[in-house]
Length: 222
Image 1 (cartoon, rainbow, N blue to C red):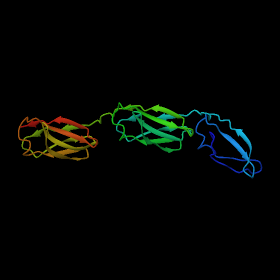
Image 2: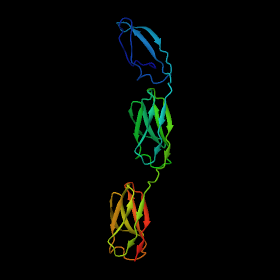
Image 3: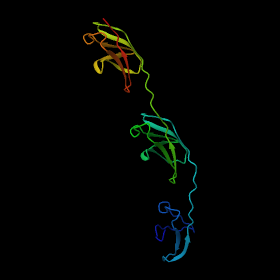
Image 4: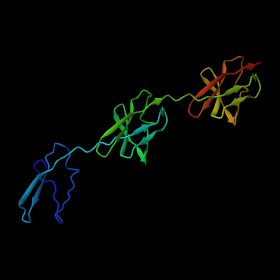
């Protein structure tokens, strides 16, 4: 190849086969097959015609990705042998393949909803197909919070919350005064000796596991 001997093979019943995929790297390579006799004397030299491999259309679909989710998923055609995740032009990760489906972890490499994210599929010849990933912002969680009026000097502040609320706090301005308990759809916060004035600028804040909050003013009656 290109004037160098790179591999040899034997002839059986007038037929031969020789592996060439790893050494013929360009359609412009000069490739020859040389026939030798038992004494190593060249008897025949034939130039190999090299043609481009046929390009079969690749199909790649990518599901919409919500910013902050773990994985990007989608489907591919059978001729796609490798799928990779690119963020802002840089390859970040190779996807796991399962039949005609793929999945790739993306949460740690997509740091902004404005990032340019692409899924790139490759066939066995190295041909590629690029598909942009649509990123949507995560919608805020809906939080329900009702707070019963509190009479100065009573024991606890009570109320109700939606099931996605993990805990509630009693705040005064930017200061957290007390953390309360949530049981089912109800909460209570011990406030005697903590809530000492009216109106006092007190609020109850509901917190979800994902960090979303909802704040409601506390009505304090004398």
